[in-house]
Image 1 (cartoon, rainbow, N blue to C red):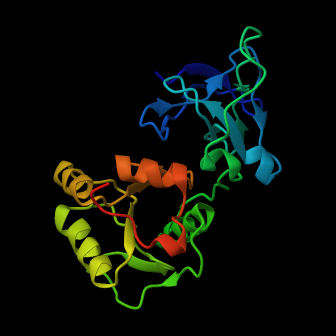
Image 2 (tube, one colour):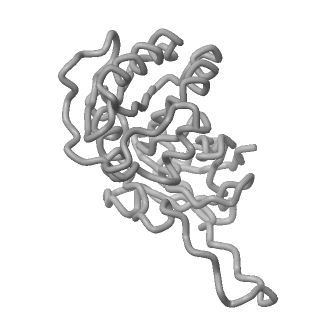
Length: 246
């Protein structure tokens, strides 16, 4: 559960209670930074990209993720940066062998660079950057416009980005899948508002990866095909599209 701490503005001395926002980890568990109640908040006078993000450990799966640094806007106009306890990777067990298994493809790729989503254009940019991170090339606007949202195309892939506040419905997913089938391509769906239960069920049956675009700018897998794509990355172009039933 997200922590709450008392916060006093150093500029006007007003008292606040701050609750850390929780964001979904790739495993689906809500994750929030650990606040440091013993430290004093400081005004966020200068902005620096590296200071805007924190490494946070998921309490459910132990995965390390990048989350926005907690901030609080006081009514006097001061923006306060809330102190946190920095997450560190767990120490290695000395009883374990020195050799380790080969890292998964995801671990060999650099971390996803977050980009905050504030507009529909930001949502499309984040999806395109994520597809490039997965290994897709020649990413561009799709020639055929989808019934809703914005279409992206890459070598062997069609993607749909839905930046609306309406959860994607089964028809949205099915239309994308049918269009991709006619072009002998894989497909992926990115939604800012998530998906209805029926859309999730249909996508899993068709093998369509579903991603949720949270406002931190890191797409989160929302079903098993998306989790597999996140881990394995783009398929080898020589192998053709993945079988939807696998």
